[in-house]
Image 1 (cartoon, rainbow, N blue to C red):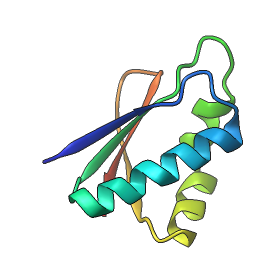
Image 2 (cartoon, helix red, strand yellow):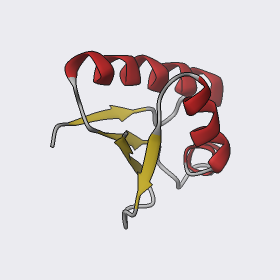
Image 3 (cartoon, rainbow, N blue to C red):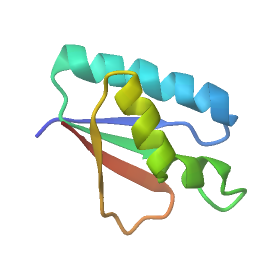
Image 4 (cartoon, rainbow, N blue to C red):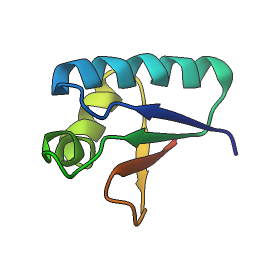
Length: 83
């Protein structure tokens, strides 16, 4: 299973969303099946809370990307299977 990782730690939310959309486009082209989003968590929860929310999944589906969140023990990373 091929995996792509993106580090958006320190980004503002809208910039982070744009970066993730760009990487998801790359995943589609490359045939990647998973994406790890490194967002951090110690210096604010905005990115972590958004990328682990149903709102993120719905907005990505609206953009043409169906994702399923994977259980992961690291609070600084959100991991998804690309369906």
